[in-house]
View 1 (tube, one colour):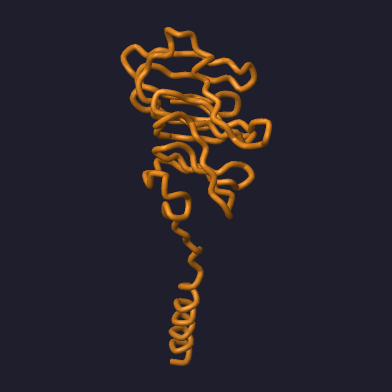
View 2: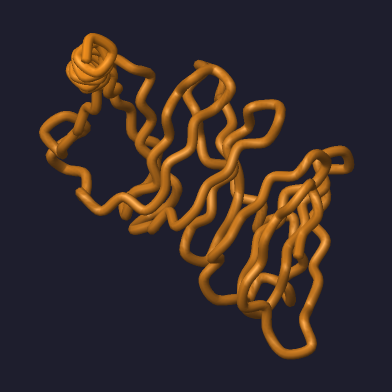
Length: 176
C-alpha cells in the first residue's frame, strides 16, 4: 500500500512539473514588422548567425531578434522559397527570378539576381517553386527547367526535362 501511494504521488508531481517545460512562443504581426508589409508569409529560414529571414509577398523580412528590416527583391515580388548554404548565404526564389542576398558597401543586404548569368533564351520560365542549397551547388526548380548554380565557378547551368519537373527533393546532397 505504501509503494502504491508513493508511486501515485510521484506520478502526480511529475505531471505537475512536466507542464512547465514548454518553450516560449512569440507571434509577430504587421504592427511589429511594418504596417506597409503584407501579412502573407511563405517561407522562413535562419542563417548561421541566428538571423531569421521571412519570405513575404512584398520581399524578404529580416529579424535579428530585436528589430525588423525589409529587403526589396523586386517590385511586387512574391518570395516563394529560401534556403541557406553552409557559408550562411541566403538564396531567394522570387516569382520568375532567383538569386541571393549579398551585403552592399554599407553592410546592408541587397538582392542579387542570378538571372543575368543566363543567356536570354534560358530566361523564359514560369514560377520557381523549389530551392535546395547543397555543399557545392544550389538548385532552383521550375516546371520548365532546373537551374544549377555552382558555388565554386559562380556559373549557372540549365537542365531541361523530357516533359516537366514536378517535384524534387534533396537527400544527402543529392537531388532527386
